[in-house]
Image (tube, rainbow, N blue to C red; front, side, top):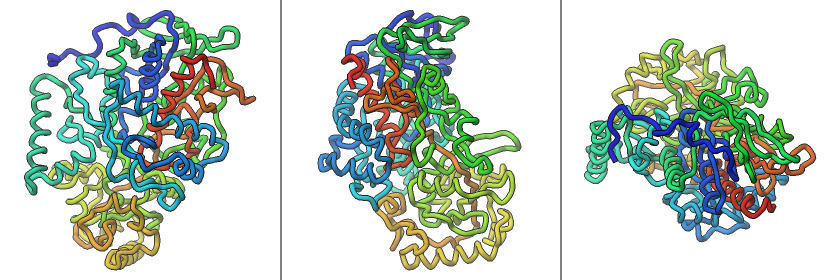
Length: 578
């Protein structure tokens, strides 16, 4: 399908597709909300999805879309006991019933979404759990990657899909995933990657020449949301954009609907059976976020700013309670920001492409390493969240590399060769600092030069020995999987000795919030007494994480989001049975 240039969005006004009555209202159009709507529809229920933003997709559309979900077809050697042993070692005992529900229903939920056409995926071949030292951890079998999706099948609705982050784009609008990045990096050196790179570029050029505003080959979060949305539209489920829920309404003590601002007016939608909250938690709410962290430590979220705690507030107004347990209120990640003067140009979470690579280290304001750079973004981000900057407007830590590492792997928004042409602009804007020597770099960063030189000398010795005695970088299967297998004896360690030298400042950040509404094993929202609020459910990041603020592996949020979306739909269809 070709959409002429200039045509955008759905062909109907939002208020025209907003029904007066339905069985189930879903509030929020990220992966959890869309999945719950598709499951409910296939169980015979009428559903409407309300999204307050102009675009659907929420934080899910911005994500890498890994899905941590045990007992899938690629994990036949896995078993429920080992999964629960691993999760129990990470999270609080009080969440055991919800974790048991997750493990018990994971296989059925995944099978449903796969066979109903809402999810195409491939098991990730190498995907070690993030805490390999714990009992029950595995090296592979629990992580799925979403398959690419042809966005042209959405027609006009492709323009309603939330645009991806700049870090998922090259050449201004071509989406890439991890495999694509490796393919493009091998361009010109090997025949098969070169041929595939040319095919990717050719597809993107055709998209732009035929009037699309972006590449239509969707990957990562865009592909996940587009697959679910395609299933939604194919079932005739109304998705109402620009629909802000003002309040939930009660009838005889049960949540019975919602008052909604849509179009130029307000209307009431009656829910015969239930309301499902899937608004993405509260990363976009400064007041709620500050209450959960040290206000003196800079912190930035990579989640959608529209996830402002609105769903939680709606639940609290009818008796729902925010959970008080958990080791962290956030799913942490290090973040860097590109600014030009006072204007923010872009930001990126440093997840897997740079920190773990040989020739890259992280140092604090004293010029010393402070953690294992190759550990998961949550573990690294947690360590970073405890560091204070040396002065206001200064980052508390820096990622540092040499010219060889920058050329091979990139650093944050700075691309590796051959996609490196924009790096000079990043240096001019001050996002990336360049210097001919380590002492010159230390001076630019405001770090003690002698200490930084000592840090790099000790790191070079560790690289030569293949063992990091300070933090164990490259000492686990998870670490090594993120390194460079061409580097020996440790794929995560190499000396920084090829000038010039580069640095990017990083601050504490998150991929979303872990703290959410108290729910039971059916995702029913609970009140202060621990009783269910009749007719009210929460999924995704509106639901308190079953991981208790920990992060077991890639896709920690999306796995439970999909499984509990399926659980909720079944609970409602069966009459709210626990």
